[in-house]
Each structure stands twice: as C-alpha cells, then as structure tokens.
Image 1 (tube, rainbow, N blue to C red):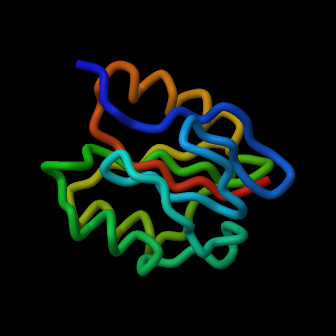
Image 2: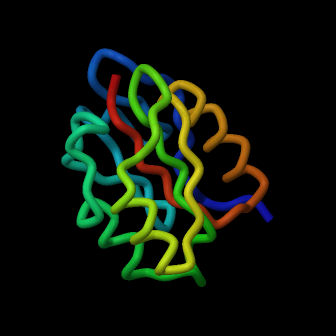
Length: 119
C-alpha cells in the first residue's frame, strides 16, 4: 500500500523541494512528516540525532535511509550501534541516491525514516 509520504522532487542548493514545499538544510522525514534535521555533515552525526526515530520504534520504522551528503561515508560506530540496539536497520548512501531510493520505497509502502544531509 502506498503511503501518504511527501515525495522528494529535487535536492541541492542546501535543501530539498518536496511535494509539500521547499525545506532549507538537512531533512528528517519520519512518519510521513518532513522536519528540519540539525546535521550538516557525517562528521557531526551522533546517536542523539536519531532519538526521534528510536522513540517511535520498530513498529513504525523498519530502517533509516541515511543520505550521507555529496559522497557515501560510513556512519559513526555509535550511531550504528544505537540503531542496532533499537532493532532499526540502517541503509546509507550519498544523498542523491537516498532521495531516489526514498521515493521508490515510500511508493511501495515501506516503513522507513529518511535522514538526509543537505548538499
């Protein structure tokens, strides 16, 4: 079943244009709601940046789709371990790929959160 999630129309210039409007800076889409996400780079990524996702739990979020910025990078170990403890999967890729993947997976009805670092 398709979800009522916002679609990502374009990205770049430090933000995202969604079906619901333009968002400046990094973006978290959780429970089909887009909101600002205070992460500017993978270097500053910490478990607390995923607290909202962990709080809603595995019933609402099968996995996090992390857009790592202009290039793919391994998230910090503490982030990977925090999500693993919560039983929430983690897929990471560059932000461009994450945007395309997000649109496909939400159209398929998958339960995921998107954490996208702006490029």
